[in-house]
Image 1 (spheres, rainbow over the protein chains, first blue to last red):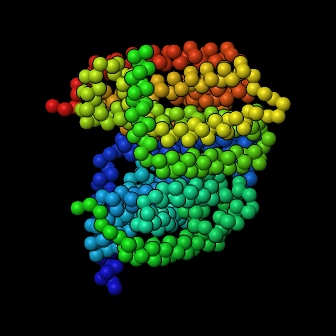
Image 2: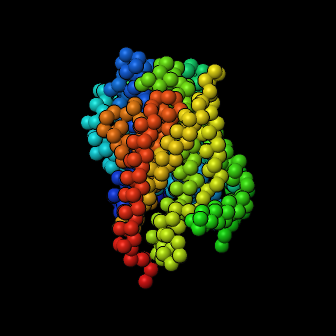
Image 3: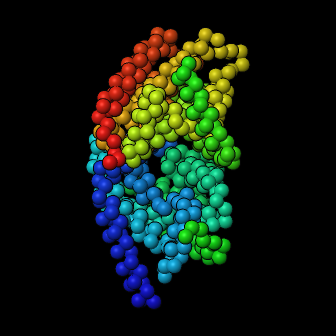
Length: 271
Length: 261
């Protein structure tokens, strides 16, 4: 057992190093990539700042400065949310790559987790200068305590794992039919609204928040942002991390259940 | 007339190609409707808090969204596939074959591929627009409709020019496919009237990626927020952009040295 864990750890370290080395070749590309993704939150920020001004300074507990803080931290959390896409499974099956993955003595999700974790290390570094420029331009109101900063640093990785497992489970549906794109789109649309990506959770009507409470989305997006942006008690912060852990367990369970059935259905393509 | 015949021939081939995959129409329609759904959700959330956004009422913003969706559909249908193919040709050296054809190269790279199923966005956008501007007792004047059509075309010409200008940089830098994501990212800003953006961003959206002229102005025409004079101004700017794109394209062509040996 200990041996296996050590081997798994070594595998992660190695794969992350390879991903880092690969990603560091394309520095200009990385910068453009991070820059291109700033447009979306800036649009939301402009809209809600206008709304806040019209309402005399704040909307659902968010002042202009706090909105700026939310959508600047948003950019980093959005990056942590980039994981192996469910659309990618179709390609893996069609090209026959999946056959190779099945031969590995290790569950292939480990490779995806480690690979994307390596990319994250690069994007986090690339993100810092952009966040500084955004901070100068939009003057965010950000005043987190030490515990908040600590929880945030953990929570962004929790968010990464939560989203990875659920996207993987969703992608596995490609084993049954290749016409799953419509389903993915629907899932992503619901996620967009209920995760905190579109608007902070407090902007949503009560009934929507009730639905969101039963879904993993907000723990992968709104929670990490709020842990840094809104003042939260220690209990609330730790409770949030615990919820992430719960959803990681549910996601992992889902992946292993669907995976076992999917592999039985698999018929190799290509050669 | 020759030009029209060439365009129609390419359009026909593209349509025949895509008509083989009819299920994609349903898929595209679902995508369009989902995008519309999330758009409507944001509007509902915003107008839950305020009655107007910077002087724009709910139906007026809906009109902006309609124009945005329509124009976005046209970009995805006509501009983006052609630009992508052009970039791929430059990288692989197959652009040589474009130059050997007896048709103007700029025309040819602009009409080679169409994704006709993206028309679902044009359709959905048009429906939204019609719902937004037809109020009981407020018929849209024919003159207003004409002016809208004119400003829409002017806006389309501007967006085409900007896409082409940025793609033309491929003659110098070869690997520029990143600009497609960048342009699509910025395009999302056009969903809202550009007046809501802070000064520097607004100027950028007006003159660099002319979303103000391409989307806000046509919507303003329909919601009677703007005069014919502004449309004339937009048309003048469009002429400048189209000429600039043409000049830059020729400069790029002179620079082209082919990628193959």
